[in-house]
Every structure is written in structure tokens, then in C-alpha cells.
Length: 91
Image (cartoon, rainbow, N blue to C red; front, top):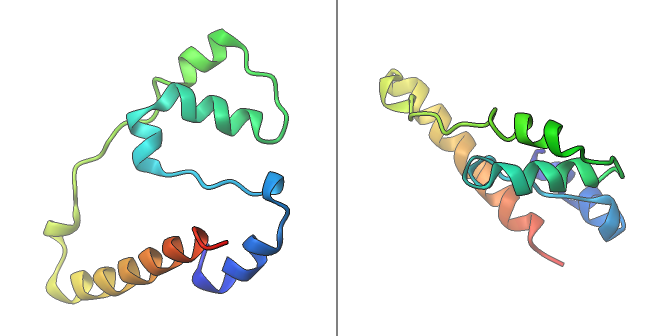
């Protein structure tokens, strides 16, 4: 979601919006996947949840391998994304 979508996100009723972090998904896959599945009202079968919780895995950072110009672009886009995340936490 880009920063331009933040007002639309906040315009939704609180029970119609959800924020999911990849870092949290990797750290706590079972609870985050269960939360994600329950969000639209799906039932979570224990065997499905066990299998799904094995999928997320942390990845090593690949940005150090980028060319300097690509790193600058990535840095700028990352800052935009961080600003959007901060905006999501506003009331």
C-alpha cells in the first residue's frame, strides 16, 4: 500500500482493516496465519494451519549486492514505505 492509500485505509471500519508484517509472520507464523485466515471469517483447520506455518521463512538481506544506483532507489522507496507504515498507525 502506498502512502496515497492511507486515507482510504483509515476510512474503513476498524473491523475491515488489518496490518500484517512479514517480520512478525516469520517470527510467529502460526498465530499470524491464524489471524490472517480468521480476518475474512475463514475457519482454520489445525492441520492446514500446521502446514501453512512451515512456509514463511526469514530471508537474508540481498540489498548489499545491489549496484550503488539501485541501492539509492531502494533506500528512497524504503523511506516512503516507512512513512506509510507510520501513517497506518495514526487514528
